[in-house]
Length: 346
Ligand SMILES: Nc1ncnc2c1ncn2[C@@H]1O[C@H](COP(=O)(O)OP(=O)(O)OP(=O)(O)O)[C@@H](O)[C@H]1O
Ligand SMILES: O=C(O)c1ccc[n+]([C@@H]2O[C@H](COP(=O)([O-])O)[C@@H](O)[C@H]2O)c1
Image 1 (cartoon, rainbow, N blue to C red):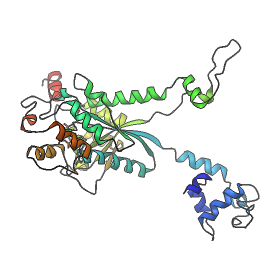
Image 2 (image 1 turned 60 degrees about the vertical axis):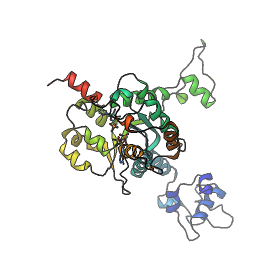
Image 3 (image 1 turned 60 degrees about the horizontal axis):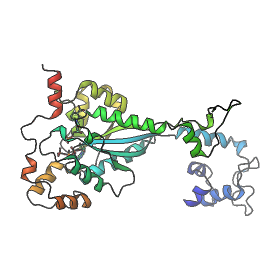
Image 4 (image 1 turned 90 degrees about the horizontal axis):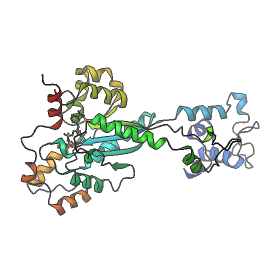
């Protein structure tokens, strides 16, 4: 692999040039002869190992343009997966969601997942048994310390009021846009270019050095239960659901007990935008939920291997999750219900 990488030979080229001595020789024919010349691929190869196509152009193998075309065609849309939720506490299944979604998107050949974000909901969500955000955040951070692409973001849970998911998505999309809009000076510095000046010593935009980086797209990563919850009256606003699905898109992981295909069929909004919903089947079905973890902890049962070790140590150290903590917010309405019923009292 290393050899192929170093000599920049693309596997599809190798397949086209397969010859009796095998792929390694095809690769070597390019690296040693370093030629796609009119003389033919590998004809400079002293041991003759590469003399398998004498004149590629004669058989219509005009090599460089197809290489470029292939590179263009394989340019993939960069995606950032955003998972919102209580994470009360974070479980190994929450981490699995990211792996499953990334595999799925990569298999389409159209997307490249560049980052995953866990965004725990704020305390103002008022869900029964919801522990303080500081604890949920700390556990999620400990749980992600062994991954190099999933991170935890505190913006949502540090807001004093509950924030609708669509606003969390907008926030992260804007943040990505800002990150990609580096100043020309910064871009030039990064590329080692000197600043271009005109005669009056004004900065001139350098088109080769501009800030034209394509901004990655935020997608909502969720389990089937969250997508289904979008049709619960007064829980989500229709316009928010529409924006989440049509503007951003969703990657939805199957969950035992949720028939997501039927649900999409039954919802006019979801059906209309079904092309923006990636359904991912988890074949190694896994029915872990935070509710079950909390129940086991209350009962003094082990949750090892269901919760990442570092998060479990934190739970034990701080003696989290007991009968008392489960009664937090008991009797209170979930903030989205309160907000939507107030603005839409019918
Ligand atoms: N076993 C699972 N399969 C698929 N998705 C899951 C699973 N567990 C959690 N998720 C998803 O992870 C996200 C965050 O979930 P959340 O923090 O609400 O955990 P949860 O296990 O669903 O919690 P609870 O049991 O308290 O409802 C949601 O999108 C949820 O659908
Ligand atoms: O944006 C909304 O209207 C909306 C309505 C209900 C729930 N949500 C979000 O969905 C997530 C549900 O988490 P949970 O733990 O209640 O399954 C959580 O992040 C909420 O903020 C979002």
